[in-house]
Length: 406
Image 1 (tube, rainbow, N blue to C red):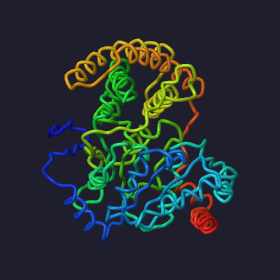
Image 2 (image 1 turned 90 degrees about the vertical axis):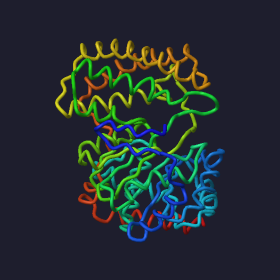
Image 3 (image 1 turned 45 degrees about the horizontal axis):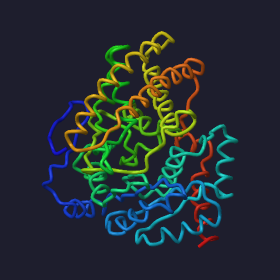
Image 4 (image 1 turned 180 degrees about the vertical axis):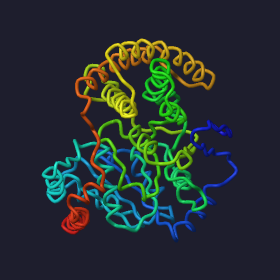
């Protein structure tokens, strides 16, 4: 993807293969002397037992510019947490493991719930939110990066390229979103982005007309990537969803809170592969089926907040328009895959398109029945206003957990 195309809405920073990873790392080490950089790793315990995360840690151990690594650990018991402390101890950087299931962290959850500030159900969004709060409570980082823990093709160059736009003091960017081609094991991947997000954004523009927000989302080469970096100044006011709409939600918050010239997307890899979600057509609470509903609801809510009026008729029209647009794009994806020697199962992908079309209607119905429902976690500014000691108490809870199980 080495080109220099700009879409006119958000800056696109390409990998033109003219700067080495070592040169970027050296510059970042210089920037980090005055702008400390922290990395957040939202992780399930099961990922410690996979093949991706050990290799990721081997790469991170060679990164010289990171001030702190914050690991958010979900679905772990006490024995597994103790194992995680040893597992991450290979990192030479200052690092911490937040055990979200510990009694102390559950007490923090209870305090939030008592204040009607429930952080929502367990998931990546809630995990990231607590990690953000920890970094803010430390008060010593200027930049925070986030990436997943299941990246099979990880290299430290990915992190360097992701962080560079917001760490460079001469750049105006407050948020950098990573993009890459989703290919792996000889296949064209990225089904949710290719088969849902791209065609539904095209369809929404046809059905409801031009919206700056739709043009903004369409400008991102891979809007569902889990890799992004932010300067920490906007974090206290960042309102993120706890469900599968996290990535779209973060972009929407950037659209609402930041100036257009302060958002960019950056090419971080030539190829990217990670754990693939099951389609789960029989259970709308799991896999790509759940993901598609949450993503659609996130987009619908943002458009409604900007003044778009939705109705059952609009959602029925949207479903029909989406179905046609998705099939047309599938033809393009099939030809692209074939020309590049990649596999693509057209029958399976048409089945996914049919599932997504049904889920668009489902998401629309949920929205119409509960228009005031919100999956957003409260901002940390609101939490601090309601309970000024909670953030410092969270630091103490994490430290006490580590002391008990080290």
